[in-house]
Length: 459
Image 1: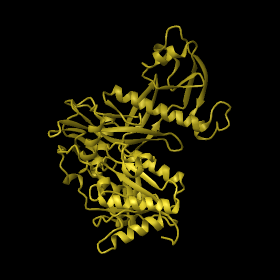
Image 2 (image 1 turned 90 degrees about the horizontal axis):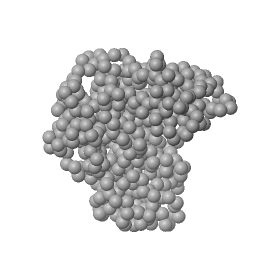
Image 3 (image 1 turned 180 degrees about the vertical axis):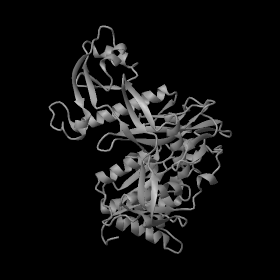
Image 4 (image 1 turned 90 degrees about the vertical axis):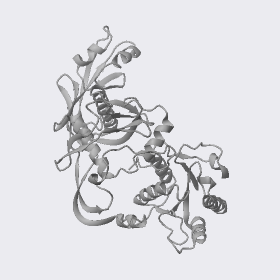
């Protein structure tokens, strides 16, 4: 640390209850370039405990992140750190110094030290969601980063994983993106006369995705595709089509009606909605996430239960479950996917994994708190190989053993995705002793304490 310069993000948490979360958060902040202090990465045997922490908070900390759970603020160590932070905030007149975050289902009010009066960031909606909000806060306040590039090997060493090393060696990694291999060249626009509320209601039954733009209906579908889903007296009239390859080549940057960025955003949403329509048609069930987006999972039935054969990244046939049943908790678990579309110079579909729980094999548990507690504890023994294999199995089932996943966009029109994720050639290899797929139990009937605070669903 540079003398007299505040550049430290200090993370205060309950030990050992919240060590796992703090390790996760510290690592990701470090990889973004922030200088991070937490006792899971900085304090080793023989150090002067309070002298070091007091000095770090008073002299070097620019942001003090306090991890709040139902029990963390009752810990003497956490109380001591918060008191030091309040003293530093007052003595040095630091603005937005203390950032409270909540990682469980604790109430937002009634916290000591006036923490409830501050802008608390919720991680209870998902660690990834909370992390985005935290980084936004750090960036908005111009929190400084290290001037030198982050050394991944040093980060792994700092988080004390003696079984993990980084070696310079060629390796191939599987991404979570599917290439878009085929997309219509044109986007159709239709003018619809009459009361817009009426045709919107009718079009809610249309299997082809659409959106409104400047009083017009925009869709990949043609005139004959959408007419059956409109009131009989509503006759759509065609407007000029938009050539999508021109969008990618910046050909419409100065178009009088369209902005290139807006077109790409709308097309991304259109493709995502087409995916959602297709998943419903394929018989998958929907789970709506807290952000309003949809994830899709296979319901429990004879064809989806048990071990299912699929080819792994090397083409070798393996067997894996896409869903299972927990006897202790009396719930089904389902691997689910949310999609995010990137239509641009490299058109691709990102597959975001989730785990959904049902009591009947079909309908997600309505109790969001119970769903959250299950998700935080259920997958803690799942390592990256399992997540990778579940992804490969999922897209294999969607493709019905074909090389592509094809969705209908209307008469003679379709969009296609490769059924194999993008492969990335790496210059470094992560060597770890974490269990491989063959070493893990395929019977995922894990007994979960519903009050468990461990969360690995954001791995």
